[in-house]
Image (cartoon, rainbow, N blue to C red):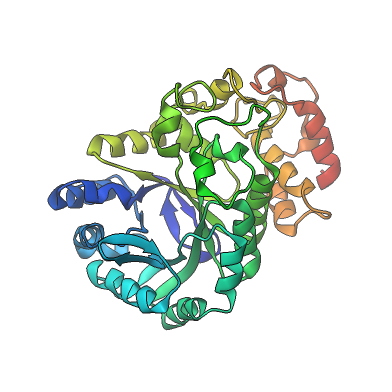
Length: 381
Protein backbone atom coordinates (compact mmCIF):
# COMPACT_ATOMS: atom_id res chain seq x y z
CA UNK A 1 0.00 0.00 0.00
CA UNK A 2 1.35 3.40 -1.00
CA UNK A 3 1.14 6.19 1.56
CA UNK A 4 0.98 9.93 0.99
CA UNK A 5 1.76 12.88 3.23
CA UNK A 6 -1.44 14.55 4.43
CA UNK A 7 -0.31 18.10 3.83
CA UNK A 8 0.90 20.13 6.77
CA UNK A 9 -0.22 17.45 9.26
CA UNK A 10 2.85 15.45 8.17
CA UNK A 11 0.87 12.23 8.69
CA UNK A 12 1.55 9.55 6.09
CA UNK A 13 -1.78 7.92 5.31
CA UNK A 14 -2.71 5.09 2.98
CA UNK A 15 -3.95 6.04 -0.49
CA UNK A 16 -6.93 3.77 0.08
CA UNK A 17 -8.77 4.54 3.31
CA UNK A 18 -11.79 3.25 5.20
CA UNK A 19 -15.09 5.13 5.27
CA UNK A 20 -16.92 3.64 8.22
CA UNK A 21 -20.55 4.57 7.62
CA UNK A 22 -21.66 1.06 6.58
CA UNK A 23 -20.36 -0.70 9.67
CA UNK A 24 -23.63 -0.63 11.59
CA UNK A 25 -25.40 -2.59 8.83
CA UNK A 26 -23.65 -5.80 9.90
CA UNK A 27 -23.23 -7.86 13.06
CA UNK A 28 -20.62 -6.32 15.35
CA UNK A 29 -18.12 -9.18 15.12
CA UNK A 30 -18.31 -9.15 11.32
CA UNK A 31 -17.60 -5.41 11.11
CA UNK A 32 -14.78 -5.60 13.65
CA UNK A 33 -13.16 -8.30 11.54
CA UNK A 34 -13.65 -6.16 8.42
CA UNK A 35 -11.62 -3.29 9.89
CA UNK A 36 -8.92 -5.67 11.08
CA UNK A 37 -8.78 -7.19 7.62
CA UNK A 38 -8.37 -3.73 6.08
CA UNK A 39 -5.37 -3.17 8.36
CA UNK A 40 -3.68 -6.29 6.99
CA UNK A 41 -4.00 -4.74 3.52
CA UNK A 42 -2.14 -1.60 4.59
CA UNK A 43 -5.15 0.67 5.16
CA UNK A 44 -4.36 3.00 8.05
CA UNK A 45 -6.93 5.85 7.97
CA UNK A 46 -10.57 5.55 8.98
CA UNK A 47 -13.34 8.12 9.10
CA UNK A 48 -15.88 8.07 11.92
CA UNK A 49 -18.54 10.69 11.29
CA UNK A 50 -21.17 8.30 12.63
CA UNK A 51 -22.56 9.18 16.09
CA UNK A 52 -24.42 5.90 16.70
CA UNK A 53 -23.02 3.77 19.53
CA UNK A 54 -22.77 0.60 17.46
CA UNK A 55 -20.50 2.05 14.78
CA UNK A 56 -18.25 3.70 17.35
CA UNK A 57 -18.03 0.53 19.45
CA UNK A 58 -17.08 -1.47 16.37
CA UNK A 59 -14.21 0.84 15.48
CA UNK A 60 -13.03 0.96 19.08
CA UNK A 61 -12.88 -2.82 19.39
CA UNK A 62 -11.21 -3.19 15.99
CA UNK A 63 -8.37 -0.76 16.68
CA UNK A 64 -7.94 -1.27 20.43
CA UNK A 65 -4.86 -3.48 20.07
CA UNK A 66 -3.27 -1.35 17.35
CA UNK A 67 -4.40 2.21 18.03
CA UNK A 68 -1.01 3.63 17.06
CA UNK A 69 -1.30 2.04 13.60
CA UNK A 70 -4.48 3.95 12.70
CA UNK A 71 -5.23 7.58 11.87
CA UNK A 72 -8.78 8.41 12.92
CA UNK A 73 -10.90 11.19 11.44
CA UNK A 74 -13.33 11.87 14.29
CA UNK A 75 -16.13 14.38 13.76
CA UNK A 76 -17.06 17.09 16.25
CA UNK A 77 -20.70 18.13 16.00
CA UNK A 78 -22.09 14.79 14.85
CA UNK A 79 -24.41 13.76 17.71
CA UNK A 80 -26.86 11.00 18.63
CA UNK A 81 -30.15 12.35 19.96
CA UNK A 82 -33.16 10.17 20.72
CA UNK A 83 -31.80 7.39 18.55
CA UNK A 84 -31.06 9.62 15.54
CA UNK A 85 -28.12 11.48 13.96
CA UNK A 86 -28.25 15.24 14.49
CA UNK A 87 -25.64 17.71 13.23
CA UNK A 88 -25.32 20.54 15.73
CA UNK A 89 -23.03 23.21 17.22
CA UNK A 90 -24.97 23.26 20.50
CA UNK A 91 -22.37 22.51 23.16
CA UNK A 92 -24.79 20.66 25.44
CA UNK A 93 -24.76 17.98 22.72
CA UNK A 94 -21.38 18.52 21.06
CA UNK A 95 -19.17 17.95 24.08
CA UNK A 96 -20.87 14.76 25.39
CA UNK A 97 -20.90 13.35 21.83
CA UNK A 98 -17.17 13.91 21.42
CA UNK A 99 -16.42 12.45 24.85
CA UNK A 100 -18.54 9.46 23.87
CA UNK A 101 -16.43 9.12 20.72
CA UNK A 102 -13.25 8.90 22.79
CA UNK A 103 -14.79 6.41 25.18
CA UNK A 104 -16.23 4.10 22.54
CA UNK A 105 -13.08 4.25 20.39
CA UNK A 106 -11.12 3.34 23.55
CA UNK A 107 -8.65 6.16 22.98
CA UNK A 108 -7.58 9.42 24.58
CA UNK A 109 -6.89 11.24 21.33
CA UNK A 110 -8.22 11.70 17.80
CA UNK A 111 -5.67 12.25 15.03
CA UNK A 112 -7.90 14.45 12.86
CA UNK A 113 -10.58 16.34 14.73
CA UNK A 114 -13.12 17.22 12.07
CA UNK A 115 -15.35 20.27 12.12
CA UNK A 116 -18.34 18.31 10.94
CA UNK A 117 -20.17 19.06 7.69
CA UNK A 118 -20.22 22.77 6.90
CA UNK A 119 -21.82 23.51 3.52
CA UNK A 120 -23.34 26.99 3.96
CA UNK A 121 -21.73 30.40 4.26
CA UNK A 122 -24.15 31.29 7.05
CA UNK A 123 -23.03 28.32 9.14
CA UNK A 124 -19.36 28.97 8.40
CA UNK A 125 -19.71 32.59 9.58
CA UNK A 126 -21.64 31.51 12.67
CA UNK A 127 -18.93 29.05 13.69
CA UNK A 128 -16.06 31.54 13.56
CA UNK A 129 -16.80 33.34 16.84
CA UNK A 130 -18.59 30.47 18.51
CA UNK A 131 -18.16 28.44 21.67
CA UNK A 132 -18.06 25.45 19.36
CA UNK A 133 -14.88 26.60 17.59
CA UNK A 134 -13.30 27.57 20.92
CA UNK A 135 -13.92 23.99 22.06
CA UNK A 136 -12.31 22.55 18.92
CA UNK A 137 -9.24 24.74 19.40
CA UNK A 138 -9.05 23.84 23.08
CA UNK A 139 -9.05 20.16 22.14
CA UNK A 140 -6.16 20.86 19.79
CA UNK A 141 -4.21 22.78 22.43
CA UNK A 142 -4.72 19.94 24.91
CA UNK A 143 -3.55 17.34 22.38
CA UNK A 144 -6.90 15.56 22.51
CA UNK A 145 -7.10 16.15 18.79
CA UNK A 146 -3.79 16.30 17.01
CA UNK A 147 -4.94 18.26 13.94
CA UNK A 148 -8.03 20.25 12.95
CA UNK A 149 -9.84 19.24 9.78
CA UNK A 150 -13.23 19.97 8.24
CA UNK A 151 -15.73 18.10 6.09
CA UNK A 152 -17.72 19.85 3.38
CA UNK A 153 -19.32 19.23 -0.01
CA UNK A 154 -19.18 22.89 -1.09
CA UNK A 155 -15.92 24.02 -2.75
CA UNK A 156 -16.50 27.65 -1.80
CA UNK A 157 -16.75 26.76 1.89
CA UNK A 158 -13.69 24.55 1.52
CA UNK A 159 -11.82 27.54 0.09
CA UNK A 160 -12.72 29.54 3.19
CA UNK A 161 -11.38 26.69 5.31
CA UNK A 162 -8.07 26.77 3.43
CA UNK A 163 -7.79 30.51 4.00
CA UNK A 164 -8.69 30.26 7.70
CA UNK A 165 -5.18 29.34 8.79
CA UNK A 166 -6.31 26.91 11.49
CA UNK A 167 -7.79 24.10 9.37
CA UNK A 168 -5.06 21.67 8.34
CA UNK A 169 -6.89 19.23 6.06
CA UNK A 170 -10.25 18.80 4.35
CA UNK A 171 -12.60 15.88 3.75
CA UNK A 172 -14.27 16.65 0.41
CA UNK A 173 -16.58 14.84 -2.02
CA UNK A 174 -14.73 14.09 -5.27
CA UNK A 175 -15.51 12.04 -8.36
CA UNK A 176 -15.62 12.90 -12.09
CA UNK A 177 -19.36 13.60 -11.95
CA UNK A 178 -19.37 15.87 -8.90
CA UNK A 179 -16.38 17.76 -10.28
CA UNK A 180 -18.60 19.15 -13.04
CA UNK A 181 -21.14 20.62 -10.62
CA UNK A 182 -21.13 24.28 -9.54
CA UNK A 183 -21.03 25.06 -5.80
CA UNK A 184 -24.23 24.61 -3.83
CA UNK A 185 -25.31 24.77 -0.21
CA UNK A 186 -27.83 22.01 -0.95
CA UNK A 187 -26.24 18.56 -0.73
CA UNK A 188 -29.20 17.04 -2.62
CA UNK A 189 -27.78 18.61 -5.79
CA UNK A 190 -25.12 15.89 -5.73
CA UNK A 191 -27.78 13.20 -5.99
CA UNK A 192 -29.97 14.64 -8.74
CA UNK A 193 -31.15 12.23 -11.42
CA UNK A 194 -29.74 14.19 -14.36
CA UNK A 195 -27.17 16.93 -14.94
CA UNK A 196 -27.53 20.02 -17.07
CA UNK A 197 -26.39 19.05 -20.57
CA UNK A 198 -24.25 22.20 -20.70
CA UNK A 199 -21.96 20.95 -17.95
CA UNK A 200 -18.46 20.23 -19.24
CA UNK A 201 -15.20 19.59 -17.47
CA UNK A 202 -14.21 20.58 -13.97
CA UNK A 203 -16.14 23.45 -12.42
CA UNK A 204 -13.86 26.50 -11.90
CA UNK A 205 -14.60 26.71 -8.16
CA UNK A 206 -13.56 23.09 -7.67
CA UNK A 207 -10.41 23.63 -9.72
CA UNK A 208 -9.66 26.69 -7.60
CA UNK A 209 -10.08 24.64 -4.42
CA UNK A 210 -7.54 22.06 -5.60
CA UNK A 211 -5.14 24.87 -6.50
CA UNK A 212 -5.48 26.54 -3.10
CA UNK A 213 -5.04 23.28 -1.22
CA UNK A 214 -1.89 22.51 -3.19
CA UNK A 215 -0.54 26.01 -2.62
CA UNK A 216 -1.26 26.05 1.13
CA UNK A 217 -0.27 22.43 1.76
CA UNK A 218 -3.78 21.41 2.81
CA UNK A 219 -4.24 17.69 2.23
CA UNK A 220 -7.58 16.38 0.97
CA UNK A 221 -9.17 13.08 1.92
CA UNK A 222 -12.01 12.00 -0.34
CA UNK A 223 -15.56 10.97 0.46
CA UNK A 224 -18.25 9.88 -2.01
CA UNK A 225 -15.62 8.81 -4.51
CA UNK A 226 -18.07 6.37 -6.12
CA UNK A 227 -21.10 8.70 -5.89
CA UNK A 228 -22.82 6.06 -3.78
CA UNK A 229 -22.21 3.43 -6.45
CA UNK A 230 -24.03 5.48 -9.07
CA UNK A 231 -20.98 5.65 -11.32
CA UNK A 232 -20.89 1.86 -11.54
CA UNK A 233 -24.28 1.77 -13.31
CA UNK A 234 -24.50 3.23 -16.82
CA UNK A 235 -28.24 3.80 -16.37
CA UNK A 236 -27.66 5.98 -13.29
CA UNK A 237 -24.34 7.51 -14.29
CA UNK A 238 -24.57 11.13 -15.54
CA UNK A 239 -22.07 10.16 -18.25
CA UNK A 240 -24.28 7.41 -19.65
CA UNK A 241 -21.45 4.90 -19.13
CA UNK A 242 -20.20 2.95 -16.12
CA UNK A 243 -16.85 3.29 -14.39
CA UNK A 244 -15.05 0.76 -12.21
CA UNK A 245 -13.92 1.28 -8.61
CA UNK A 246 -10.29 1.38 -9.80
CA UNK A 247 -11.11 4.10 -12.35
CA UNK A 248 -12.94 6.20 -9.74
CA UNK A 249 -10.09 5.77 -7.26
CA UNK A 250 -7.54 6.80 -9.87
CA UNK A 251 -9.55 9.88 -10.79
CA UNK A 252 -9.67 11.03 -7.16
CA UNK A 253 -6.00 10.32 -6.50
CA UNK A 254 -4.88 12.31 -9.56
CA UNK A 255 -6.52 15.54 -8.31
CA UNK A 256 -4.08 18.10 -6.87
CA UNK A 257 -3.67 17.88 -3.07
CA UNK A 258 -5.64 14.63 -2.78
CA UNK A 259 -3.99 12.15 -0.45
CA UNK A 260 -6.47 9.36 0.28
CA UNK A 261 -9.87 8.13 -0.87
CA UNK A 262 -12.05 6.71 1.90
CA UNK A 263 -14.16 3.91 0.47
CA UNK A 264 -17.12 2.26 2.16
CA UNK A 265 -17.01 -1.52 2.54
CA UNK A 266 -19.58 -4.22 3.23
CA UNK A 267 -17.28 -7.19 2.58
CA UNK A 268 -13.65 -8.27 2.48
CA UNK A 269 -14.08 -8.71 -1.26
CA UNK A 270 -14.86 -5.02 -1.59
CA UNK A 271 -11.71 -4.17 0.35
CA UNK A 272 -9.73 -6.43 -1.99
CA UNK A 273 -11.32 -4.70 -4.98
CA UNK A 274 -10.31 -1.25 -3.71
CA UNK A 275 -6.80 -2.29 -2.66
CA UNK A 276 -6.32 -3.91 -6.08
CA UNK A 277 -5.79 -0.34 -7.29
CA UNK A 278 -2.25 -0.59 -5.95
CA UNK A 279 -1.33 -3.25 -8.52
CA UNK A 280 -3.75 -2.26 -11.30
CA UNK A 281 -2.46 -1.77 -14.82
CA UNK A 282 -2.57 1.52 -16.67
CA UNK A 283 -5.45 0.16 -18.73
CA UNK A 284 -7.42 -0.77 -15.62
CA UNK A 285 -6.95 2.72 -14.16
CA UNK A 286 -7.98 4.44 -17.39
CA UNK A 287 -11.01 6.59 -16.58
CA UNK A 288 -10.16 9.07 -19.35
CA UNK A 289 -11.11 6.93 -22.34
CA UNK A 290 -14.42 6.04 -20.69
CA UNK A 291 -15.35 9.67 -20.02
CA UNK A 292 -14.06 10.89 -23.38
CA UNK A 293 -16.23 8.38 -25.24
CA UNK A 294 -19.31 8.80 -23.04
CA UNK A 295 -22.53 9.90 -24.75
CA UNK A 296 -23.24 12.56 -22.11
CA UNK A 297 -21.07 15.52 -21.02
CA UNK A 298 -17.50 16.20 -22.02
CA UNK A 299 -14.08 17.12 -20.70
CA UNK A 300 -12.93 17.92 -24.27
CA UNK A 301 -9.86 20.13 -24.45
CA UNK A 302 -9.23 19.84 -20.69
CA UNK A 303 -6.31 17.92 -19.23
CA UNK A 304 -7.47 15.51 -16.50
CA UNK A 305 -3.88 14.37 -15.72
CA UNK A 306 -4.76 10.83 -16.78
CA UNK A 307 -1.32 10.03 -18.26
CA UNK A 308 -2.54 8.79 -21.64
CA UNK A 309 0.02 11.03 -23.29
CA UNK A 310 2.88 8.76 -22.13
CA UNK A 311 5.50 7.93 -23.22
CA UNK A 312 7.17 11.18 -24.24
CA UNK A 313 10.26 10.92 -26.44
CA UNK A 314 11.79 13.75 -24.38
CA UNK A 315 10.83 11.94 -21.15
CA UNK A 316 8.55 14.75 -19.99
CA UNK A 317 6.01 14.00 -17.27
CA UNK A 318 3.34 15.77 -19.29
CA UNK A 319 0.53 15.22 -16.80
CA UNK A 320 2.51 16.79 -13.95
CA UNK A 321 3.65 19.71 -16.09
CA UNK A 322 0.04 20.33 -17.09
CA UNK A 323 -1.05 20.08 -13.44
CA UNK A 324 1.50 22.66 -12.30
CA UNK A 325 0.70 24.89 -15.28
CA UNK A 326 -3.03 24.81 -14.46
CA UNK A 327 -2.30 25.58 -10.80
CA UNK A 328 0.01 28.46 -11.74
CA UNK A 329 -2.21 30.27 -14.23
CA UNK A 330 -5.04 30.54 -11.69
CA UNK A 331 -3.02 33.14 -9.74
CA UNK A 332 -1.78 36.63 -10.70
CA UNK A 333 1.69 35.40 -9.77
CA UNK A 334 3.03 31.86 -9.76
CA UNK A 335 2.84 30.49 -6.20
CA UNK A 336 6.32 29.77 -4.85
CA UNK A 337 5.33 26.20 -3.98
CA UNK A 338 4.12 25.48 -7.51
CA UNK A 339 7.27 26.97 -9.06
CA UNK A 340 9.37 24.86 -6.69
CA UNK A 341 7.47 21.65 -7.50
CA UNK A 342 7.86 22.35 -11.21
CA UNK A 343 11.59 22.98 -10.92
CA UNK A 344 12.02 19.65 -9.15
CA UNK A 345 10.78 17.81 -12.26
CA UNK A 346 13.63 15.98 -13.96
CA UNK A 347 12.59 17.22 -17.40
CA UNK A 348 11.04 20.62 -18.08
CA UNK A 349 8.50 21.81 -20.65
CA UNK A 350 11.23 23.61 -22.60
CA UNK A 351 12.57 20.20 -23.62
CA UNK A 352 9.44 19.47 -25.69
CA UNK A 353 10.41 19.01 -29.34
CA UNK A 354 6.89 19.58 -30.64
CA UNK A 355 6.52 16.17 -32.24
CA UNK A 356 2.81 16.01 -31.29
CA UNK A 357 2.98 12.24 -30.80
CA UNK A 358 1.41 12.63 -27.37
CA UNK A 359 -1.58 14.48 -28.81
CA UNK A 360 -2.62 11.48 -30.86
CA UNK A 361 -2.98 9.53 -27.61
CA UNK A 362 -4.89 12.19 -25.64
CA UNK A 363 -8.58 11.19 -25.31
CA UNK A 364 -9.60 14.82 -24.72
CA UNK A 365 -7.80 16.42 -27.69
CA UNK A 366 -5.65 18.66 -25.49
CA UNK A 367 -3.16 20.78 -27.53
CA UNK A 368 -0.23 19.43 -25.52
CA UNK A 369 2.67 20.86 -27.53
CA UNK A 370 1.13 24.32 -27.32
CA UNK A 371 0.67 23.94 -23.56
CA UNK A 372 4.28 22.83 -23.15
CA UNK A 373 5.40 25.98 -24.94
CA UNK A 374 3.21 28.11 -22.66
CA UNK A 375 4.45 26.27 -19.56
CA UNK A 376 8.09 26.78 -20.53
CA UNK A 377 7.48 30.49 -20.98
CA UNK A 378 5.52 30.76 -17.74
CA UNK A 379 8.01 28.87 -15.54
CA UNK A 380 11.09 30.13 -17.37
CA UNK A 381 12.46 26.72 -18.27
